[in-house]
Length: 288
Image 1 (cartoon, rainbow, N blue to C red):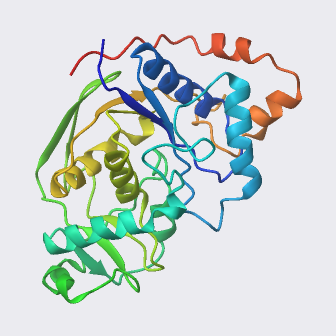
Image 2 (cartoon, rainbow, N blue to C red):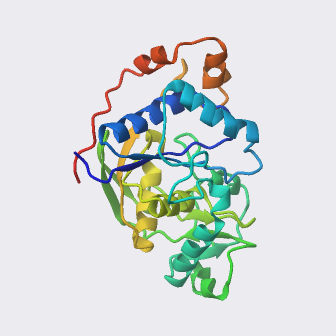
């Protein structure tokens, strides 16, 4: 039995959850329960322009309808709150200070075209645009900034460094910094932390021992390993779930309204049938 297992559900309320989310969250739920562990619900609502109250309420209702429960979260509290990212700015700011003081990040004044992608998890078909490093010479100026507001901030990756980890489903994974991904965003110029930094900070603060999420975030795990080491955080284990795809082999997205949990609920679908349709076994995690 794995002791002190802590997993998490981390949906973003930018639309109704769909079947792909459901299978991944079911995997997270099953792995936590089979480890006799704790499951944390975290509302990843950083993108205030796209997050809406009705989507927040729907997350709770739809996941409960599916048969999921959790032990900590915005609706029930817990020792590691607040459990909504929009209320955790001070945590992210403290991490930015550590990265700045450690010489890991630099201010970037380049084009804004890829900045809105930094709020959400980058997926396989919309990963962060390769950054050519125009502002890297500003690394020495980072300590002159007392706050990150006003410019975007990038993590300077160690070019050529191999990042390796063993995924619980896909096995050994290897990515090379500077080739498979470039200097990535950790803070937006409108004073909002990017996805990569926020989830690392929250997983550490909430003592998450295993991260269960979709396979489209395998590359992000390599980025986050760099952040974890720079911040001297503990490194969780990872379990990436295969994606559900449509008839055109595209990953399911929130545009697939017909496959949203809300639509399926309204149609009277039996949630037990959905759980059986996932056709995936999620064994208990092994001791570390």
